[in-house]
Amino acid sequence: MSLQNRVVLVTGAGRGLGHSIAQAFADEGASVVVNYRRSSDAARALAESIGTERAIAVQADVTDRAQVKAVFGRAREHFGRPVTTVVNNALPDFSFNGDAREKADRIGYGAFAAQLEGIVGGAVNTIQAALPGMREAGGGSIVNIGTNLFQNPVVPYHDYTAAKAALLSTTRTFAADLGPEGIRVNMVSGGLLRTTDASSATPPEVFDLIAGSTPLRKVTTPEDFAAAVLFFASDWSRAVTGQNLVVDGGLVMN
Image (cartoon, rainbow, N blue to C red):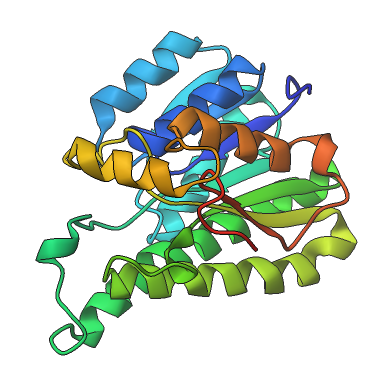
């Protein structure tokens, strides 16, 4: 697939899964906007490794509409053309530790509100800032990053899972609304990945247990996941919108 003429924004790309997604786009020839909130050194190192002609690292908190709008301005100035692919990967602060998470009888709505603001609010801010450039270009692709936990809630991440489920609803309603303009909106959802910053503390036996539960007998890697994101960004999925693809080795089947 050719992505050489694409300008891609990956939010939360300074580390973890976002880093892998940004690198995958760069490997396919796309120009990449590496968004970060706090991971300045890692984001800048990634952009430098790709090359200044095809990558730029830009700081922004996606919950701040003005900061997000400025990212798109910087991208257009740097590349001379608009962003036409957006990957909404950024997360608010969250501890992926099931044993330490508050259970149903203790969690407060404030935790849900924080995740909704970061996950749904951040995605809405980013999509809306991207629309003028996508309309100018005659279309675009938006890929939201989800989770398989709202289909297989094996860990009590109540607030995180609820926000990701809301993001799926937003994916589908935005797909219906923006489809007539040639703008596609899809979601790629994963489970535990081997290995990211979020899963670095996961014991090896947990990875082995999950691998043994999947038809493919393996735990998905960030590179596996990124490949599915590239599919939704490419013309190979030009007739696909409003879909949620679960990439977890077959652990969850739709």
